[in-house]
Length: 294
Image 1: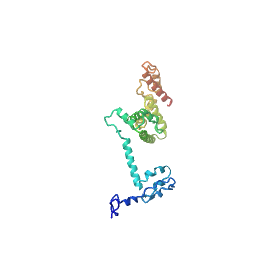
Image 2: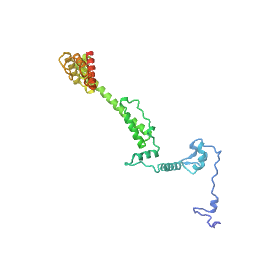
Image 3: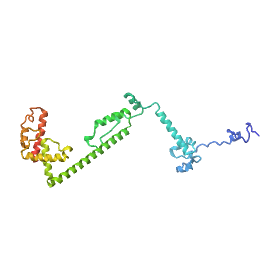
Image 4: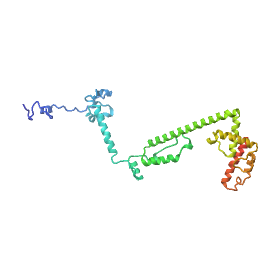
C-alpha cells in the first residue's frame, strides 16, 4: 500500500514518508524566562549535554544559546573551538613570514612592524639590584636592545634574557668572591704556622715593601702568594738595615732617602712631562706611606 506521495507506508528511505515528515518536531523558541542552571553539572548527563542545556546558560552566555545548542556534548564544543583557533591563527599570520638568512635590515623592520613587535624605545631594561655597578655593561645592554628591536623580539623575552645573563654574572661573582676568601684563609693559615703571633707585624712589613717597590697589594697574584709575601717581609727588613737599594729607583737605600730623592727629581718637578710627573707622585705617595707605617 502506498500513500499519496507514491511511497510505501512502511518506507525506510532516507527521506522517509510524507507521514513521517509531518511528524518532525520543530524546536521551540528559547524562553527568556528559563531559569539558568545553578551549576555546570546540571547541564550534563554522563558525557552528553542534557536536552535544552543551551537554554539554561547563565549570564552573558545566554545570548549564545541558539548557536551553542547544536553541540550535543562538551567534546563537540571543544573540537569546534580548536578548529576556530586554528583558522584564526592561519588568517592572522597570513602573508607574514619570518625573513630568511639573506634578509636585509629593511626586511626585518617590515616583519617586526607586521607582527606588532615593540620598537627600540619600548624596551625598558635597568640594572638588576644584585649586580655591582662596575659589572653592569650598559653598552652591551644597549646593543642587546638594538638587536631585539631589529628582529622583533617580545619585551618579556628580552627581560628574561637580561635576567638570565645577570643571574649567571652574579653567580660567577659570588663564586669568585668565595674562591678569593678561601685563598686568603689558606695563605693566612700557612703564614700563621710560620710567624705565629707576630704575623700582624710581618704583614705590615710586607705591605711597606710592596708600596715602596710599586706593587699592588690588592692583586691576588701578589697579595695571596706566600712566597712573595715572605720575600717582601725580607725586603722591608733589609731596607731597614740600610743595605738594599729599592728596585726601580736610582741611588739611596732607605725609604726616607728614596723619598727625598724623588721629591727633588726632575720627573716630580714636571721637567719631563706630565706622565713622568704623575708616576713620580705615585712613588712619592707610596714611600710616604711606607715611612709612616714603619
